[in-house]
Image 1 (cartoon, rainbow, N blue to C red):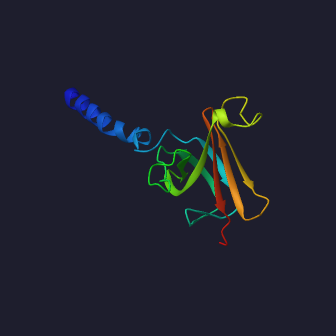
Image 2: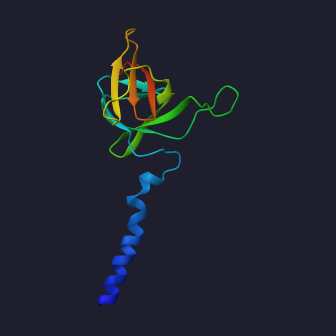
Image 3: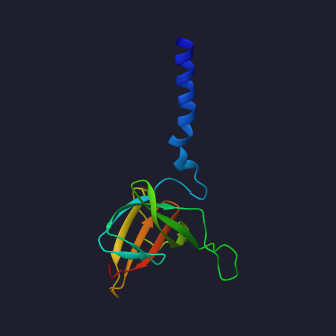
Length: 144
């Protein structure tokens, strides 16, 4: 009886472990969520509506193709996550930490995100700063 219980426990733990760590093993993801942002207005992400709400952002290793067809080294896909699901993707411009203007890095080193409505009033910009880079995502406002 005890052997059967021990075997069952080990089996359950073995089968459950991969799903518990799946977010670390998803192809193309650099790491778990980089930041959390609150969108106050509807926008378009990759041409699809993204409703106002709170989203986790994940910077992927996936790079969109440049006009030449090669991966674009200055851009990455960013995923917007709600309730554990990818609800939108958009391209971010990547600026390595060495290219940041003076005074734009976080003193604490912790990632931080800012959502800004641009002066033209047609776009929202999501700016995420980490120790290694700054990511800028520009999304047009939606007429939802």
